[in-house]
Each structure stands twice: as C-alpha cells, then as structure tokens.
Length: 452
Image (tube, rainbow, N blue to C red; front, top):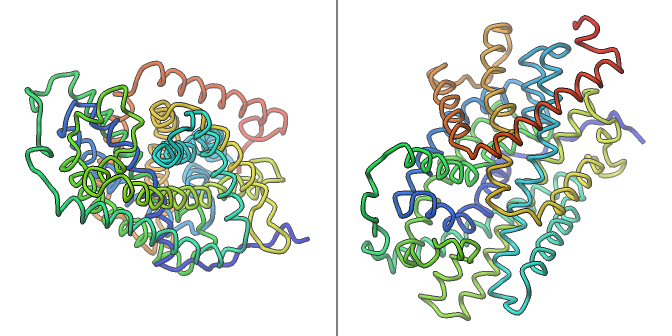
C-alpha cells in the first residue's frame, strides 16, 4: 500500500467548469429565492445578487492567480500556508482554515441536503419535515457512494450531472420567457428604493444569500493535483463558471418572480416552500410540476457531488502537509483517492442536515470570510511582495484593484451579519487559536521553536 502516491491529472477544462457550475447551480436559487425576497421585502432584493456578483468576480481573480501558481490539492489551505510562511504564520493560518472548515464545509453541504428535503415535499406530501430531512441526509450518504471511485470516472459523472442541472435551468428560463408578466416581476412595495441604515443592513443580508448561491466558483482549486494543465485550466474554469452562472441566475430569478408573485412565497411561514414547483404547477399543472421536481432534485445531487468532491480533498492536503491527522492523508490503495477524508467530511455533512437553513448560510460565511476569503487576499499580496520570481501562469488583471474590491465586499458582508452569529464565529476562531497554541507547544513547533 503506497501512502505517498499522488492522484493523476485527469480533469480538463470542460470537466473543471462542469464541476464548478454543478456546485453553484445545484441548490442555489431553487431554495433561496423566498429567503432573498424577505431580506428587503420585494424584487429590489435582487440587488443582493448584483453586490454578490461584484465581490465574487473580484475574488475569482484572487483564486485564479493562486490556483494557477500553486497547483496542488487543498485550495485555500495551500494558499494560506505558502502566502504567510510555511513554518511560521502560514502554519497558523493553515491550521485555522482547517479548523473553520470542519465547521463551515459540512454546513455548506448540508444546505443542499436541506434543499433535497424541501423539494421532496411535492413528491411525498404525507411525510413529515423530519422524515424528509432524514431522506436528505440519506442523499448525503449516497453521494459518498458515488464519489467512492477513480477520478476519471468521477469526471464523466460530473459532466452528466452538470447536463441535468443545465436542463433544469433551461426549462425554468424558457417557461419564464413564455409566461413572463412584468407587473408581477416588478411589483415593488412602497419606499422600495429609499435607503436608510436598516436597508443597507438588509442589502448585506441579501448579498450573503447571493454569495451563498455563487459559492463553488473555486471548487476546482481544491483538486489542483488532479487537473490537466492547471495553470491554464483553473483560471478559465473559475471565471467562465462565474460569468455563465451569473447569466443563468439572472434569467432564472426573473423567470420565477415573473410567474409566481413574490408575496405568495416570501411570507415567513412559507420560506421553505419549493418555489420552482409552485411555478411549474401554475403553468403546467401538478403532474408536470412533480415530474420537474425530480429534475430539480437531480441538480441538487449534482451540487452535493461537486461540493463533496472538492471539500474531501482539504483535510487530505493538510494531512499530507503534516498539519492534520495522518490518517486523512491516505489514498485508496487501488483507486487512488482520499477515501478517509471523503467519508469523514461526508458523514459530518449528512448529520448537519438537521440545522435550520438560514443559520447554516450565515454560520458558514461568518468564520469563512475572516480566515479563508480575507486571508487569501493577504496571501496573494504577500506572495507578490516576497516571491516576485514565482511562476504565475495567470496574473490578476488590474492588480491590486480587484483584491481591494473583494476585501471591502467581504468586510461589508461580515459587519452586516447578526451580532450573535458573529460572536459564535469569533468564539470558534478564538478556541481554534487556543488549540493551535496547545498543539504547537506539545509538538514543540512554531511559535515555541524558531520557524524556518
């Protein structure tokens, strides 16, 4: 059994773009439109998606440069470790990233499993909410089974799942175009465009939902060891998937609110309603709506598949680097994928299915913004200054402007988050810092001995 083996580079541009888009399209607008409309009380809430897109595009350039230069699995872990110094502050930042990932990664996966439970309601109306949540968690276990195979087989499955997701989006968009009613879509409430302090906070809430919907534009970076020509493929996959998904989301959102009045699904008691099923039922009747719901569920499975594939590589990369438990660094002896990491992350995510959706979204973003997104921007700047000779197949356009835009955007999303959740996030990072100090002291590592 060879624990030092490396995965083979199998993912091409099509498969890389499919992986990112499957992650982004899966649960996204199908489960968050009701919650989005509640943030600002009407169609003006779609401004949140615009703000989120600006942040994501700027941040996508950060990921593109780092992913093309540091062509390894692990994504953010690798970038933070290299950017801040492998044996000094980079060791601390890498540890904190893995620490917050154990909290935020499975929470993000669980949102898709909740989406599965939500869209099972039209197909299984006699079931209870708890029963459907159990079914959603079971889908999480099924996704582990799908991923328990060689990477070249996974590439083919990814493209197939991606095609199903695109078909679902196409049906929604075409239906919306054919039956679009501008009076329904642009039914703005009074004072919709009068912004005060509360409206700016509400816009931040809408933008966080938008960012959640775009999450995944970087998923290919987490399997950098398995990408063909990563210096070329990774930046193209990141930016291409962002642009394509932004166009699709805009069309899907308008299609839905142009058929189903937003007041029908934006009440607090209706947040969990399957809004796309409602749309299809209005136009084509309940039978077709139920059939289409099956296709929606397909897209959610595609999202879960893409997300777990990328996230299962993070503890693996940290373990291979000596910063996490060694068992997570093992590859399957016959099929060559990190099977221990896959199982552990997948099972934790399935268990997190029973947490409320809104809390999952805000909770996963709170710790992630500080360590991962803002931290990576700092890592990019540090690498530019300290390692100017590094080979960079892709360099950020208009540097450093996109990095500054992304940083301001992340800070805005953070400061408009509920103070209680911010407190929990801060506490998690403080505890993680304490664990790092104890671990370093016990292992006689930096900062208790000089770093290299």
